[in-house]
Amino acid sequence: MPWGLKRYQQTRQLHFVTFSCYHCKPLLANSHACDIFVRTLETVRRWYGFWLIGYVVMPDHVHLLLSEPESKNLALALQMLKQMVSRNLHPVGGPSYREGGCDLSRRCTHRRRAADGRSVTETTMRTVEVVML
Image (cartoon, helix red, strand yellow):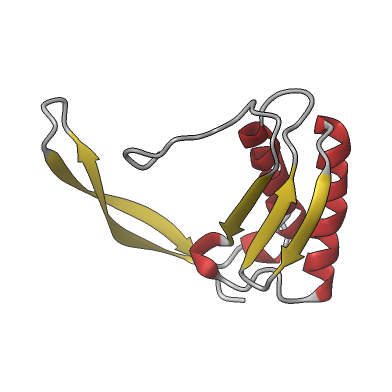
């Protein structure tokens, strides 16, 4: 969570939420992906018991205007929504995970705060699989 960010939950007010697709890719650009998102949104809405006032599905991001869930908290409901949509769009063994890719090493740089408050940069090497679609 970014420094200084305050979350206001359990206030019984409406929340305007925006979130993007991974790397801002247009994963929701076709009607099939939008239908999956809308069906999953309705499923999660019923499970967690929140009111959905409105939503906008764009190719690379989503806007939601919703109430707080009756059970659990809003962050958990949104986490469930994102995970279910991701799994439904990219099932294991589906086109996003097919065999025949190659491994590449990728340098990842992360900034974090040390215990004494100074900024520390960490560089790690990560292996990623590249899949040709």
